[in-house]
Amino acid sequence: MSPNLSAIFYLISGILFIFALRGLSSPETSRQGNFLGILGMAIAIIVTFLSIGNFSTGIIYVLIFLVIGGSIGAFIAFKIPMTDMPQLVAGFHSLVGLAAVFVAIAAFLKPEVFNLGTTGNIKLASLIEMSIGASIGAITFSGSIIAFLKLQGLMSGSPITFKGQHLLNALIGLSIIILIYYLCVTQSSNFFWSLITISFLIGFLLIIPIGGADMPVVISMLNSYSGWAAAGIGFTLENSALIITGALVGSSGAILSYIMCKGMNRSFFNVILGGWGATEQSLSKGTEQRPVKSGNAEDAAFLMKNASSVIIVPGYGMAVAQAQHALREMVDSLKKNGIKVSYAIHPVAGRMPGHMNVLLAEANVPYDEVFELDDINNDFANSDVAFVIGANDVTNPIAKTDPQSPIYGMPILDVEKCKSVLFVKRSLSPGYAGIDNELFYRNNTLMLFADAKKMTEDIIKNLD
Amino acid sequence: MEIDPFIFRLSIFVLSILIGYYVVWSVTPSLHTPLMSVTNAISSVIIVGAIIASLSGNIENIFDISNIFGFLAILLAAINIFGGFLVTQRMLQMYKKKKNK
Image 1 (tube, rainbow over the protein chains, first blue to last red):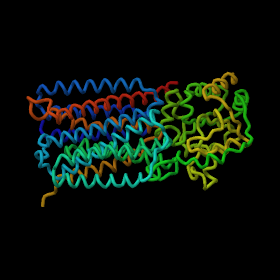
Image 2 (image 1 turned 90 degrees about the horizontal axis):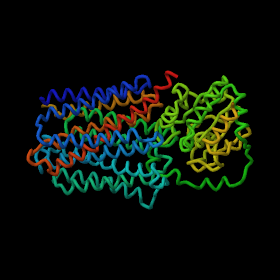
Image 3 (image 1 turned 180 degrees about the horizontal axis):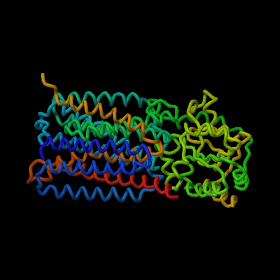
Image 4 (image 1 turned 180 degrees about the vertical axis):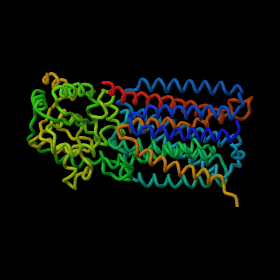
């Protein structure tokens, strides 16, 4: 196949990827979008085979690796529980990053294969592009590995900080630029390998100081990085499918990072520089005992049965307790009694953007009953009962009143405006932000101290 | 003076960022997780580079060091492509069931 023809097909596959993302604008069109994405990928791969046209014995190995990788991927995709999606995505990001590094290495070792010049005499522009691609790829890889370990619980979620951390990172960042400069001047492979090594190191150092609560931002950010890495390689290979995809993924990740930061009212740099969960100072404040009203499943069932509208506020704790199915059953029996029920989702309710929506969808909650913060926040004032299950910080009214609080200014769900609030929680312990929730002590709040799943099941029994 | 082809690639890149910006803002927040998994899958189109790296060059010497990096990159990208698209499909499937309920 001529280079011009294959370039046109690469363009088509890039366009199909755009439609794949466009399809996600509504659940109705999303499956079709995903199919277009698969089609785009198939076109890109087939065109690549055809454009090489040289079916030596090598192709057997290519197919073998394709099949092995594909089977592993398919196996993981079918086995992974939905609660583990954040880890999975982090793990996948690390693979994209590493693949970018490997392709860059292959291109550096054999530039003539990609028409980039000859070994030791690579075109300047290509050399810059491939070093940027390799460097970002390496950062994506090691950063995602750390994110994966933290999300999987194999590594403590608390931030790891040390003295001179930012200075060290700045120095490494500077040396990356210096190494790229010398690589371009000398074409020496030593600089290339050092560049990759040091990029692995900075990826690692960038993510360790970021706490568990900030993981939604980190995953989105790494998503963005994996896109920029792909785009860098796309420039090197002069491949429009890769450039388009890299740009799409890069901007997608950046937008998601922005949404997550806004959901926590934190600036991007504030998150990157680390340590929210690290500030423990506010913990000591909440030691004095204040009276709370606590109730049992029977009280909760009574309150909800006599309500005309109920808003459910789920948080990650609900998923940890695996209470989503029980919750949906409870809502079903409420609806049978003619009660209007909706779900309110805070942008950072899960461990990654949109995570809570997927968990609810898995439990067969219809997506048109699930609302985002902006769409439902005014409804709390007109609702009878708010049922908070597994959420905490995102309902804390202190975010509006106390400028001293670490979560001051964070958009919260106005749960306290409801006539009554049912708060399912194991104890009065603070959430991720390490601060006491004002809501516990309000007059209209009834605390339900129990495991989320058990409490929900007990409420169901009492509803019948 | 002739325009460097790099400028054309840069134009594609910049325009794609703009397209990405508008397309991603139109994605409904409830599908942000599938958005991440599908972007993951499509960014593995980097497999194109991996295939070229592993298939080109000296035919007698398939296991040249640069080919090996190509093969490894194919393996990683293939995990991502299949894993990414299938897990996205699995999630999107869950957004369907409710319709007939």
